[in-house]
Length: 369
Ligand code: ADP
Image (cartoon, rainbow, N blue to C red; front, side, top):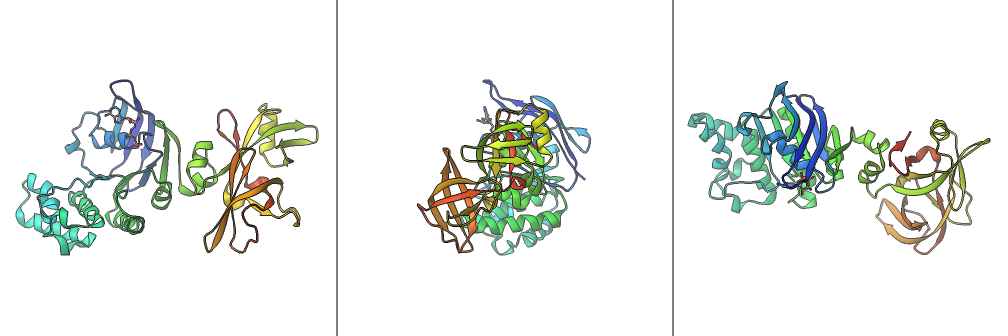
């Protein structure tokens, strides 16, 4: 059992940096939570405060309902795997994994059994006699995890554990981590700056920016219903396109106007736009590349919004193609079928349907649903 609660947690470093602000989150037992966000947004600091490697400036950390703020790291029953692996270079893999048990004076026989059990789970039985210098990146990563698992911790904390591995190995290790999670049935908290890693691993994702939580949600909901423009742009690759428009509330309905066209909003958002004083105000329209439709001037219109541009980049990826163009100073990308006849420099129409569009307040950048 390990339920983690953070109540209004702050980290203020000496010299005035507030690395984490008002972080409030409940992590139920056995959940796999990801902290994701750009470099410097406070992910590691939060993880280190949970681990007890960093003091908490304000707020409270509870594990299974017990206040942990003053509890030493070694008494929190938490294991942490670092990006750097932090293995002891002069010790063998066996000794590295056994080290914490040796310190606790666990009987030799039991140490041996537990190391072998962990080695079996991680498939590293063959390399127990080697030293870290003789291991590949992936093997070092497994040993680092072995060292954490062997202690039977209540919580696993992982800080960018795969960022030193090449892309192929990273994908492989992601699958390994999921397998491990299912097998160990423990709470996992995993830090990464890579949104793909976050989307594929987490059951719940905490998106952070400038020390502040932006949204906590499942991968699918983050993608479909981002809370604000930052989350919308951060989750998804290529990133969501943003086009600005002016809201016009008329007797005949609520419209969004761009340099090229006007489109009517007929769903529930029209009430918000009408009632919350958006008339005459700038709003941002967000649309994912897979929802952008592109067609040549000879073809007829295929979407609610109809804009014009010229293709600046054509990228063929085999199963699909990407088209990039600029509209009113903003880069736009479209994911289209591989058999498209459209190429670089072609003049095109493009657009999207209002049902696929997410609206954002231009000033607050909050989504309008
Ligand atoms: P992330 O893990 O998201 O990359 P960090 O948690 O490492 O971000 O850092 C958050 C912010 O706190 C950054 O602005 C960083 O420069 C600052 N920071 C981290 N450690 C210290 C420290 N020991 N002293 C002062 N500032 C720090």
